Image: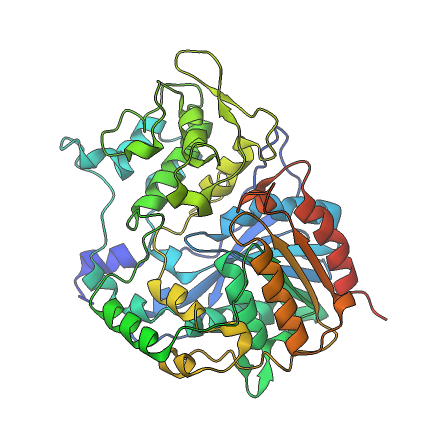
Length: 467
């Protein structure tokens, strides 16, 4: 990493501990749920600048709550993604808080103009021009700066070891004052949840620190990658970018597309789409007729019109309106309101936070393939993965798995295998498969009717019930 001041400033985006103004739900009414954000010291990863060895937490609900659900985002997702879900949960369970983990890679994101747009100090066009428009308009001279891979080579070490050590610090914080903790995650966050539960902490599994596990369309297969696959992937990583491409879109552009698109839903929902007119927006994201900003966002992410490569970003949002010039958006009875979805990803009302990870470490995704339901395997020693306690989780542990379009039955099977390995009784499991009706993201975004939440609430109550 070069040490000149300009590059240092670009990386030193650590945000002081702040109290966040209200997290706004998709409904017109302001939520009365308390939402705040803190950063705590994380794992000192070798080679990483000290200011980036941090882990953030969005804390949703009353600080006096006696129980905490800690949620881990999936691939290329961030803590803000869980805020509407968290608010809904704590409204139904006032004795609970929901803590959403904000991983360290998000400290690299430049939220300067996104924050201005959130506070009404930048227009939708100014927002778009700063992050994307400059690529085709050379007259825009003040704009987002791409981070050269050479400046962040240390991020090639941000794998499962770093993630679990950071998560453990969050769990320890949550357990203060004798609070009960349940850990869960969506998509890749499910693999992280399995890794934490089976991780070796001085000879004991992480599951001993928690009351239950929640898997939201994600988990860990019992089959690990081979040692040769691990070595080959590590070698390729050392000579390539630290960052994962999401749906074929290289970093940080999936984040930039989502941040500007979701915020445009609130800034100018009915104006002609800025993104549709931009020549570099991928053709498979553009509707065939002129649309509004809100319709462009919905078209790109709805299950029926979004490209297959973006299945991990999709929800049941609706379709283009039947008339209008430009065309607007019609929810058409679908289960996820588009305003709620845009809230999740824009982080509207939350300073310097949004729901997409602009830079997702390839190493974290690679290491997840060695978790293998907590079974020791040769690839683990190569990748420094310590998820080895898959057969000695506490029998009292409660497990809830919800399968949707991406994971489906495999998510339930993975949860069942995890339980069987440790002789966790069947009555401790809640397994729900809705892969035919729920997209990958609908469990977190469907509202007001949501089968994931309807099953989660009694599960959480049972997880902390004293016998």
